Image (tube, rainbow, N blue to C red; front, side):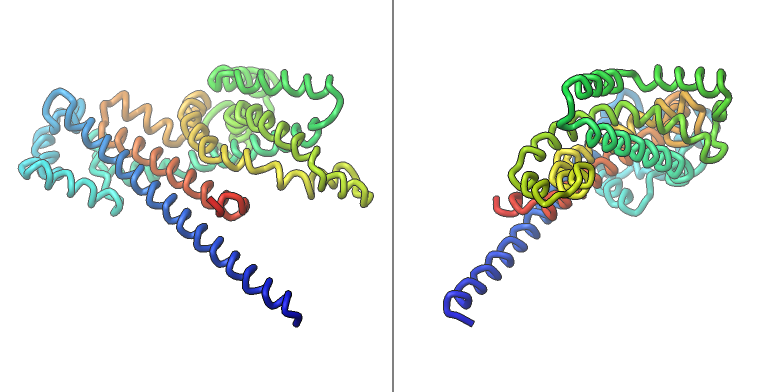
Length: 327
């Protein structure tokens, strides 16, 4: 081993170790920030509940009038204790899955929400698959192509992004269920019943992702390493899929947290339009019946999901982009 090589190897190893330490610190900072945001969301929900006009017992019971309901609420929430103790007990119960009791449904809130969670997760994942699949196909097929083709794709993306979810859902129902009879009308009756809701929810998101991905892909196709790949005789399609796409995906990954949050919000409307079970139906019923414990649980669950997804996206970015580990 030459003296020059011996001098370079420790330097490179030291740089890699320092980069890993910076990445771990930044990942820990992201996790700590996420925990802080979840604490803030839980505290905000608690403060809003306790600043609403009227007694807490009456608010949590809602429209229920059966004897002993208010006393049961007071006992469960410990309303005879000091406010600080009530708040700390509330924070302690959340990570243990104790979300209180739905007095309208007369069962634990965790059971009410848990029973309807999987249909919403199914719909969200299917819609995300539709959005990402369409965006990849359109962006890879049109990036750097002839101007008329890109203009046509841009118009289609703008229309898809601007279309209201409820309007698109009703239109798809009228055409593919009422008219052609290709898919079930409503309810959860197998994989076929998931197609139209997933397209309804995923199509507007596909328009936005496609716009972002195409711009990033066109910038990547102008990089010098792409010229080198083309000079080696690699086909255009293979070059785009294998070499250019992974460098162009960073902006799309950054949108991941926002995308999942938007899909969860849109799922409430989509489930209502298609009559599917899920958190949307539970939320609508809870609001109608003034079932405050269930509404609070859905709000906290949405905040939790958004924070977890955003934190994971930040950590993935740290892993795939070395530039973020040098700040």
